[in-house]
Image 1: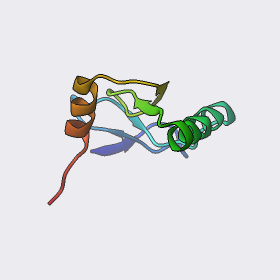
Image 2: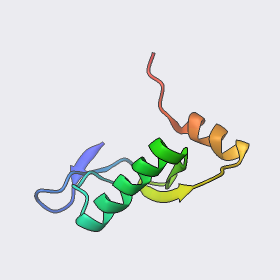
Image 3: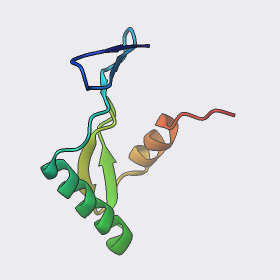
Length: 79
């Protein structure tokens, strides 16, 4: 993995992997994420992530069992 991208941006490239952009959230992204976290805490709404780059993708009232299993499998485990 090697750092790349413009100065001040933490972008890491791994051959064959999507680009991960570890930048601070802009105001709109931050507002959407805070509302999603609130909905999760208060109403059990699911928080959705884009599988390609783990960016925030919204919320949902219901998710399928397949989506839950896929999400669990996508979490790296380091024992």
